[in-house]
Length: 453
Image 1 (cartoon, rainbow, N blue to C red):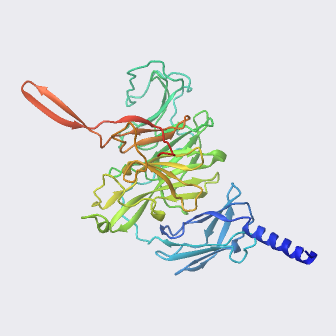
Image 2 (image 1 turned 60 degrees about the vertical axis):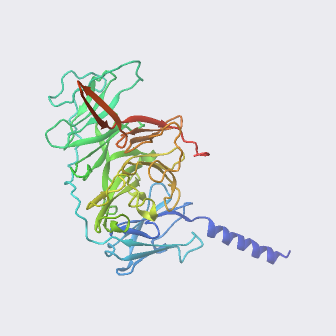
Image 3 (image 1 turned 180 degrees about the horizontal axis):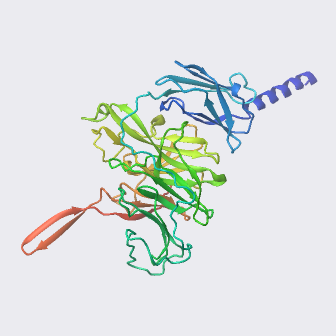
């Protein structure tokens, strides 16, 4: 082989290697997404760290034309956020190309999405809740290790029915009341229900008060809606070891205008956060799916966001993108209402392999979501209309569940609210016999065999 030919081969190898050394492994919005907010940022995560420049990203709307913007690198060193200088036009299609002019650095990528119209559905969220200041947390004067002897008159009565060799540790809980008359607290008690700490929320109620696993604590605070039991303007607050508020996370920003959901929150390494959020999809003709369906329904969808330490969204999953969930997957919704709570996500967790577990209450389903896939595809579905597993030793399955968790032995636990479970109860009173149905709840632990499903 001649030296000249060898040089040509070497140059060709270097060019191919450089061309393939990095690619876009995740982007938001997804290709073909609809109902994208007009102020959305564009998220690009590369497989290998590279220097991506604003000139490498071209964003053009069918109506609004080419958009200039800024490009910012997240603290993970691989996720870029492109922020357009101006909002997109309502209802337009937007086309994105990455590295079209610079394929030697990164594999070119092209995708498109459609912007939501500017007509907002009429969903009765309440006004945002005021944020607690660092000094207004209404902590008791006692330290967390001391029992509190005197509590307010509206403090909930806590009774221990059985105390037989309990596991060590304190119990974190919140009491709630959906009005402004009091009775809502976040509380820490010992195994005898002696209060060690309590604080009153700024307004209405707190949710999901718990340790974060790194010596801190978190809770979600927000308003409520009588119709949908949703938070409006919720935030998640981070407390230090002395139970003082030191930080907060909020899924609702100008670039991701979704409503923070109060059900669950997970603090990730490097002060990232995984948050649940809500979004509305307006003008859905449900009559095409079910007889008598509302022809102009508003669908309430689920959103999961990962925020970095600077509160930038670096990963977003939406329940209606790419047909993840169907509008008719809910198990008990009549689909004739003006507003349909089709998913009602109420728990999520980063699984041991880095992907996401999600509990969808309205669907009676636990879903595993592929966080590494650009489309956020569903890896498996457990329960509900699309169940992929055979239940062994459990003929009634779970319904309208809460509190999904992967536990150290690899099993899944959840609280089965049991809305669709019922037992016949017969009361005999003299010669009269009365029979009625009563629902029941239970705690469940499932072991999933992924080979046999």
